[in-house]
Amino acid sequence: MRNSNNTNQTLHFDPLYQGLRVQVSQGPLIREYLERQLQVFTDAMYYNPRVYAVRVDLRFSQSQDLPDFVHTNLPIHRFISSLRSKLDHKDNLRWRKKKRVNRHEMRYVWTREVGSRNGMPHYHLMLFFNGDAYRSLGNFADLNALGLCNRIREAWGSALGLPMVSSARLVSFPAGGRWMIRRDDVKTYRAAFFACSYLCKAATKPYGQGLNLFDGSRRVVPVDLNA
Image (cartoon, rainbow, N blue to C red; front, top):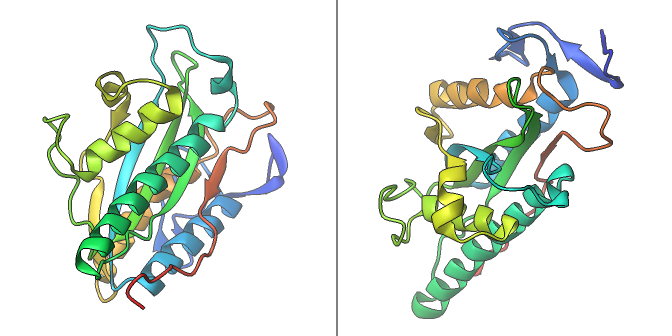
């Protein structure tokens, strides 16, 4: 069945997709989004024996006047670019110091949605990292800590032009939304795929605004600094 809000899309009602459980409790999913999600999962696991996957939500402040660019996808593109730049910088520093480094090899899936109550735009993401480079988000409480969660907060602040003390409260990490996936761990892979399929639901998407509402990283062969 075609999506009545976008006839280029196909609705998926079945609780299984390619043999993997998906979330249909809130209505049908978009099959093309599931295809992209599976491609990102497959690429991440192909290039890394272990993948650290993290669910992240990015929001805009409700107490400030929003700049015009929040009505575009410029914020999410800025966020991805900023986070990748920060992780690249860290990898390059490590390589210069030790001449050996596990590259972050970040991949991602994101969707743009609007709140059912306040109509505010926001983004849901799943971020994927080389499990030999990242194993946790680090210290949530200390905004001066050097962990992955603060790099994500800083990147969202950079995207919005806000200091991290302001952007930190606009970034949330859903409970239970972190997985260390090993190639032979089918159970964890399935759990992460099921959680990520939430991003593929047809509901709460702001159709008709001329915006891309879902995207994922393209297939890229990671650069090996150790070669």
